[in-house]
Length: 124
Image 1 (tube, rainbow, N blue to C red):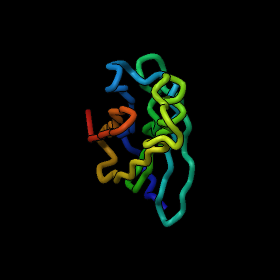
Image 2 (image 1 turned 30 degrees about the horizontal axis):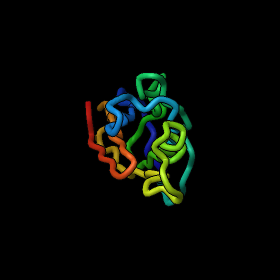
Image 3 (image 1 turned 60 degrees about the vertical axis):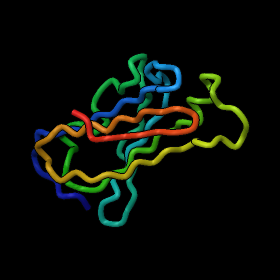
Image 4 (image 1 turned 90 degrees about the vertical axis):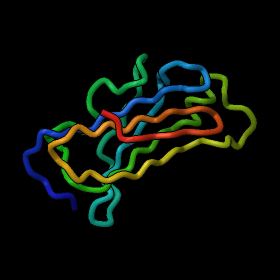
């Protein structure tokens, strides 16, 4: 399990549709805690018109050192935006596993998405 204590850090994310040059609105994102060998769903949110979640996907009261997984349901978004193409899609469900080592920091994990590629980074 993740170590829990009072922190000031938190986790945010957003999704940009780089093929169309717009925020990816309406994309479902799930966050899992992978600590201790268990996979525990912590949050499920949908991106707003700005491609962001309305609040941190992991707020400071739940933020802790550990290993996490963000799951982006990209296929549903690509189909809905007319970018789906032939089934099965090249990209459908995109997992990003990452570690949090500094519970006092803001971690921002964005997804830059197109039907045939994606990238991510630790933002600010």
